[in-house]
Image (tube, rainbow, N blue to C red; front, side, top):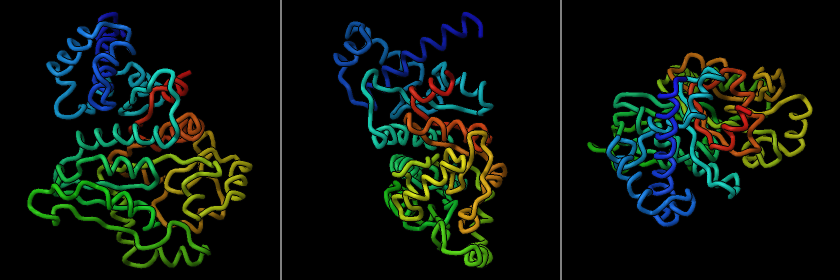
Length: 321
């Protein structure tokens, strides 16, 4: 990177940080000035500059979230097409749910920028994905068809119910959805195979494998993981997964630190697209953050399952450390 390019990154990074604090965290200019250790007048000038260069319109333009030097380094290091790094509050550790909320806003801004009318969006499940869908203005991309990537209807209800469908111009027919009508994990491999062969389920799975964009979370093997909270796994199951070398999951398929999908009976009882199917999707956007997910995110990147990563500043630094 040239000296000029490095200086440009640094300027845009400061503008992004100030804009995020002001427009997304709703801090006052005085509060930002104290946090950034600059004058209030400087904050005002930076906000004005952010608007003039197009960093801020009505909402943060997701294309400019790549202004962080961390984003460029993540792309270079892990072969990502794009990386969006959401600023952290310095010195103020947040709960996992709070981190999910901030990343959900970043993921929503990405969708708002990239979705186009007539497109298809595959949706995974989990808390962070639900927050993305709640914050994203998917109606602005209508007509849009949404496809669930796995079974587990109950896990998708929150995400779809809170999506901003109501603002669709021209009526609800411009936003449609295909949902896999089954649990994500069933009781036996035989039942799972039969369900996958059902024409209705098979048709949705085929659609899911060819969507233009997919938004997925990255889970862990912790005892409070989403699959455990939803009742598909027990705490003992989660501990056993860790003993077998699992560091995380995407769409209910568990992988190692090298990104290799584990050969395990649980996967034979699962309903959904396979991780190998993600290669056929136009762009897979992973939304995950929080220090508890470092190993899982690193494994997902090693497996090359993601084209885009939306994460928080502290995690980005740890991944590159």
